[in-house]
Length: 420
Ligand code: ATP
Ligand code: MG
Image (cartoon, rainbow, N blue to C red; front, side):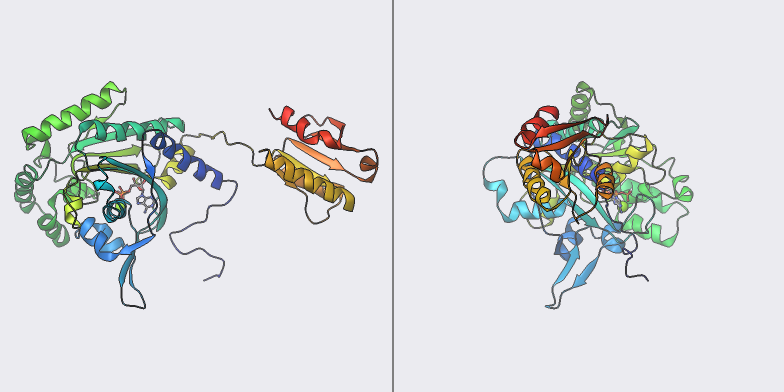
């Protein structure tokens, strides 16, 4: 193993591509910031029980994918595999839900860790931007989140994604359905592992990706046919609100999600250019999670969008984001006096908000101009002894190649004017 190799299932974000990741995070965050969501950051690890209880003991995340470890002091921790349980834990710990202003609306952005089989779009370290609205049961809140995710993807220029929508029922109707599904699954030709899963969490068998399982599920009972009146009405209202907002979706009666804690509204964003790792984001309502981790009843809804897969989706659609140039002005000093002067000018330019960089290392004109070119800067300012003796610098437009002498004291004003 080489020392210079990132661990299996991970990769580094490097310039210039890393700018795309930042832009995607920013694009997902923008509609949230604009809709009353406050930023939250929680630790990269938590007590392992938070996930084991919150995410659900029978999920792949907990049984197979969690990076759990014991500290030197004997505490059992886990690298966070997802954001919802942590955000809810933090909100409860800080009593945000008691401030009398429900729902508590929070958004986050960060790294998540799952010990998965690495492949394109599936990594052991990946990034999500997520949103949670805690402590309110209102179909408009479910609709808001779906609309905001749609808006985020659209603002990036993405078009080939679909929204899959379903309702998972609640504690009244889901158990009835669960029993019916279990009864159905017991009659199928399934391997031992899957039969065991059918006993613990039968809904997850519907999510089995294997063809041998899927082809037996054609006649499986659907939750849709078991929803109680309250769940039915709630779901219908969510559907109407997002339809009225002009957001299209597909009803997917078999959509269940990897996490145990979802109730009622559940949805997934899939992109058609990503092969088998097609889910770019997902979420739903989790009315029972707070009580599951020891808190009061706090009906909530949220989503998490995968940044890595969103970037892959952009590539699949051939979308080039319009990213601002990293550097607008590049300074090339020739000689000691020019070095001091231009360094001071670069500092001044940066202070007024113009992205500027400098030729370091005492390079000659040719090498320094190569750096100026590579930086992508629109303008280079070049100064040698003779220029300074005349009180000027050479301002070169890197696009047209035009060059003009301008007074040392006019550099900042001139560039401000030219760069608009
Ligand atoms: P999948 O079915 O693909 O395993 P999931 O249901 O486990 O997805 P969630 O827990 O809902 O995924 O996470 C939300 C989003 O985070 C996913 O839609 C995906 O974009 C992203 N994501 C999840 N796991 C990974 C991973 N291992 N690598 C990269 N992105 C991931
Ligand atoms: Mg998964």
